[in-house]
Amino acid sequence: MELRVLMYFVTVVQEGNISKAANVLHLSQSTLSRQIQNLEEELGSILLERDQKPIGLTDNGKFLYSRAQEMLQIANNTTEIIKSNELVTGELEIGVGEDRMQELVAETFGTLVRRYPKIKVNLHNVASDLIPREINRGILDFGFVSNQTNLADFHQLPINYQDRWGILMKKENPLKVNGTITPTDLANQRIILARQNGLIRGFKE
Image (cartoon, rainbow, N blue to C red; front, top):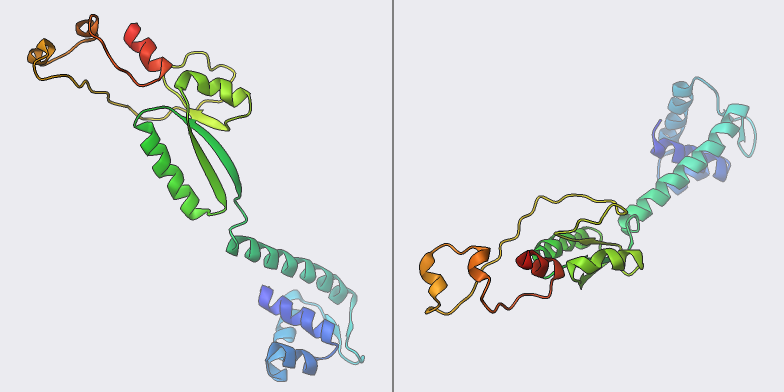
């Protein structure tokens, strides 16, 4: 049973006869009559009281007419929603720290917005340690954190991602000649770091 044929059936009922319905549907009367007959054969039941003017409905015809209207309305609404991209809408507030994760997040959600243009994504630069607090306050919907241990109250999803940090120093710095630098080597060095509490804590430890 096709939606197209159900639409033919509903139109016949609404117009009251085959001739008027055929004009509305831009079909020949013979074609429309054959489609309705095929529908009746498929269902194994007479749907129309053809001797009545305007055309009448049998009990099964009345039942199908009611259901067909519902089905056509659902189909029309679904089509409109998909075409207008209203199926996925809203605004997301996302927290991310000062590292390369920002680039990954921006690319990922850029793809999302291109697919669903009615979604608005706001990226906030937030220290990793502060993201849980901002989620609890309702400022952020979710965030990307690292080096966090007290997250038992949050739903978590691990991400297979590793960030790499480098050290920039003057050519004459004696650390340069060692080739490999360990955290111990940096113990007595003055270091400028990004404002990330987790990162600073990691260096201190």
